[in-house]
Amino acid sequence: MKRIHWLIIIPILAAAAYFATKQMRHLGPMQAHPGTGVEEMAMPATAKDGLLWLKSEFKLSDADYDRISNLHDAYLPGCMERCREIARVRRELFALIQENKNVTPELKAKLEESGHQRAECSAMMLAHFYEVAATMPPPAAKRYLEWVTRETLMD
Image (cartoon, rainbow, N blue to C red; front, side, top):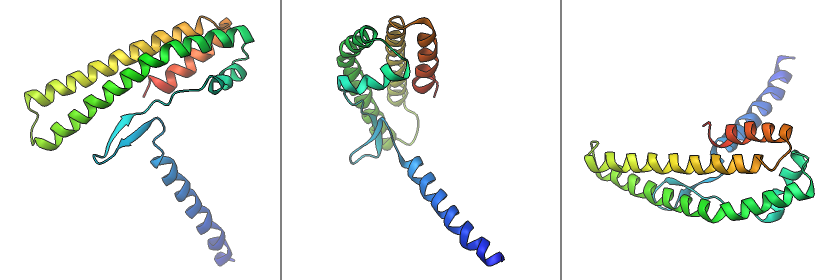
């Protein structure tokens, strides 16, 4: 009887380990920069239909959805530019880390630049989230803000 337990438990543990490993390797919006091992922001452009989940999840009217889609379209170019700049600074930071054995003034300045860029990006995202929430009915807006800030800013 004990042998049958192991025949069931071992495949279950193996499957769990496989899925856990696969989940841990999933980078989501972060992607490895080829040749450096550095992850960089890679915010994919979202097609207008890519926001349909928002309409469904928060039970938005067609008018609310159209306003949010327009806000998203207006926000995206600046977001993409900020992502490119963050990626550039991260590549430079990674290079400095590889070149040095200690925290140099140049390395410290690059760390500060990276932190400043991330703070600016977070502030711009939060402003966009508030703007999107303002187009939603109050209960949906509250739930949206709780969800989106937890998913993007509270890491």
